[in-house]
Image 1: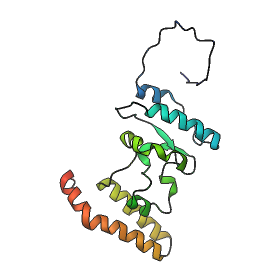
Image 2: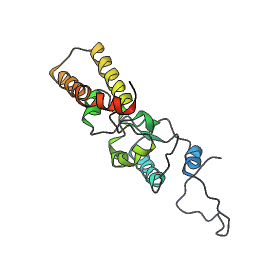
Image 3: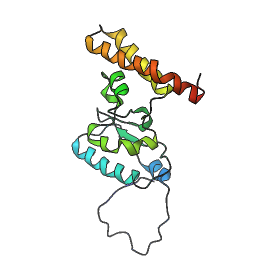
Image 4: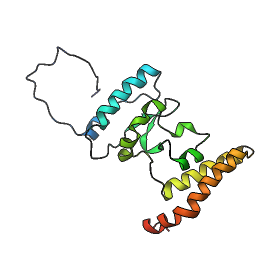
Amino acid sequence: PIVHFAENSTHVPPTLPIQSMSGNELVGYIQYPNHLSGTDHLRSFGLLLQCLLSDRDSPLCGLKAPNSDLDMVDVTSLYKHGVPEFMAAFAYRPRNFVHSELRRYEDRLGSHGLQTELNCDTFVACVEAIHSDFSERMLSEDDMDRCNIIYQWYSTRLALRVQDDGWW
């Protein structure tokens, strides 16, 4: 079924029995557009996202959110803005972050797949992004700073994380 949202409806009798639906069932019914066409749609999606994220303890599978280009992408492919390592790695890839208007939901999106942790998988993604950047352009002083941030992560914290995760 196609899900439509309405502010008020006089077509639904108040005595109609209501069946509960899990968050994952609801997300499964949502037909996301490929792209949000502007601030009005972004605001509307923000309201929907707020409802979806309220009082949800279990992860929502297939949840999408707009990136900086307003493309609707799976939350698991996005990274938390403000994490210095992610900011350094994806400096030329703002589309890897949740749209700036919806960043207030990032903490709650973390339990639904938003990449928030510095772990082995996110390290690999960060290194691949920087490697790709450097194969496409000349290095600048800012780029060297980006590399230093990732190298500090590698040399000070990653080995401990790898040992804890049993990833090695």
